[in-house]
Image (cartoon, rainbow, N blue to C red; front, top):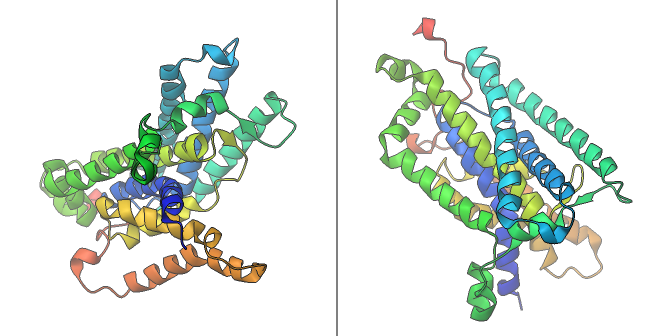
Length: 331
């Protein structure tokens, strides 16, 4: 029989980086900015947290001297700063200099992965590791720690309470983002900027400010996905190019959820489940069948993109000015 009790927690863990990435990208796209650099932003967020954790652990005379508060805050702050800088670079190029958003996003992805691999390789050399990876187990233990009473509640505790604090933070941020976008004046102004920046500008809304803030905050949220992957999912082990294609799936998830972060909570867990489904479906010794199962998340992504292109309802369409630079003098 299919073991749902073990499958669901693993699907959730796989989906949390996607949830962080899709929430951050949704917030960005609502301002009219199409940031295809999210994979690079998440990568930089992960390596920035690793850098902070590495130097903090190196400063300790013994692993027993580690402080839980600092072990959490230092990588977290480093992650937010690194992903914020990536967001600022994107905004400076696309909002201030009005560069092409598609090209800038793709360049940012390449740049972010290159930066991550450079610093990751440097840290591996500094640690004099015998393998091409670096382990930060002392710091990651605080990120991976679940609620103390989860083991006593059987299947309920394993399914709902067995995750680190970043998993619950991802859900909270997604729900708050959805509320802000739909039920606050700030969200109304942001959606107006994404739909028609010229109209929003005429109404006295500072278009550039909203684009900057939404993109930078969205980048910081996405960066937390990289931090979660390294510190929780990978148990503090950093290997270059190990992050995979989760950043691209996060962007596809934005379209799948119709730009609704609250729907993204369940959708990310669905994609996470598809990501690992090949491990739970018996395929015997036939490796070709197992490889077909591994294709499921990408097949679903292609199907979503096809159906998204034939939607007719306005509420199911992306923001009208998405991917387009705003020239105030043409207003």
